[in-house]
Image 1 (cartoon, rainbow, N blue to C red):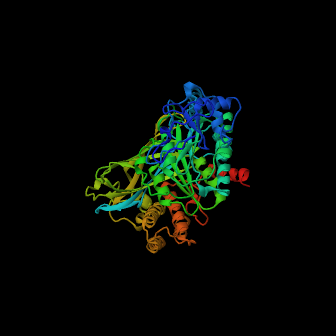
Image 2 (image 1 turned 60 degrees about the vertical axis):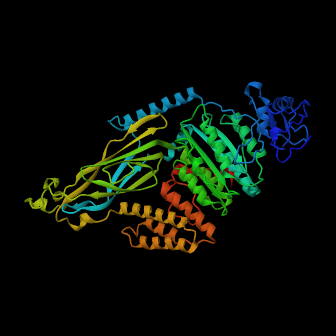
Image 3 (image 1 turned 90 degrees about the vertical axis):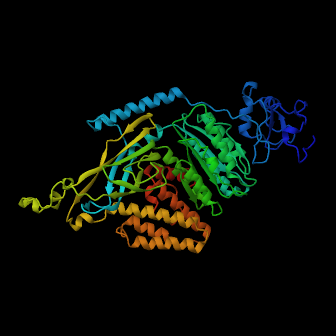
Length: 604
């Protein structure tokens, strides 16, 4: 057969199909195998159905996933034209198997939702006399217990969200009755993944497939300089499809070529945006060990990620571009970035991510803070989006993507406290005569009053019900001649302020290209923490230890600190590199159990 000239695309060349000997004319339905030999799709389907599972020209074995799809191919289910990658990638032909979405089982989803709703109602009735079904609790904290009546000030405030904890005895039950998931795994199959890296990655992918159930759907996309949909659409994870994907992972994915991360993400986003049906939760997992052959800004691409879909990125080895993967996670609707510092940690890293996805208890969260009168929120310290964007304001609504079981979110802000001239704001005037018993109690002399409240609205993904918590008040004493014990800094809040300021210092240091100046930023932050009120608190001491940690080379320094930055920003558990301690507190019991399970079963 003739070869295309450099100016011709594959669709412009009219060769012959070696099966039927007819012309492979433009506009006909064609399929290009991984060996680059091209045939009419229906001719090859007939060949495979006749148990001929090798390329008719070179006898190369046809990928298992292609064989499975061709075995059931019909004219009605095939595309009307050949498919090629569009610019900016070269017009290289890919396997022209159609991406066929297997719809979610709506009846099974409805039955599961009703069962879970009934169980949740029964549990709430048994444990409380109220009909409040909210799962998330909130705690409010102000930097000081009191502020002088006659002066204005700017103090810190804190809202802590707490998701319910799954008892150890119920983890297996939770795993069996968890919320169904649409999961897309985008994995690097470039040449640098050869050898033990690819072997471990394949073992991990098999593990992930085996953790999903018949209500979940999954797609696997591999990429080098171009991307291939190995599953050919989202597939329900029944036993048959699980086996097909495991065969595909083990037999069809090979390491070769360069790296273009955007090709895999683009294909994953396309699959999600084109869905005809959806599971309640969706996520993309991206793992790469290298960096793009050319520089790319994925901001426009990530803006097309569907709302509610989180993208979690994993950088393996010291040569990946951590800043790119961190930005992808930040733009991925609150996703996480994980730096995997050694090969054997690949499984644990994915297990930590799955452990979170499997235990989601709330999504589409809105934290609504409202203060009275002239109390104004002047600054909000987080990457989460909020309204109004222009501060100060006495109200603010903060948007969080989701919350998993046993997780916390600590939202830190600053509050302008006004001067009050009207003594009616003081519950008990300090000059008022007191009884002998009252005189011995500062608590009775200075009584706090509510100055604001917080409510949380969110969707329970199990039942799709919208829930709102009862208001939780902010309490503050306003009086003259305040004793020193009422003006002590709250240590819980100081710890969270240290976390926020350390996160900001890490972000600034990682953006600083000069290595010595970058290290100086972290050294200065460590010294500042040593003078804080909570300097001797175990968490702050761990922050200092991580900021002062030594590394073998700059790449390891940046990758590890990027990982720490994302952990403290999201307060979400991920695999942590050796030597990192301050982010360990974010991992949940379910995540740790899954990580141990995968290590023992697959990598022992």
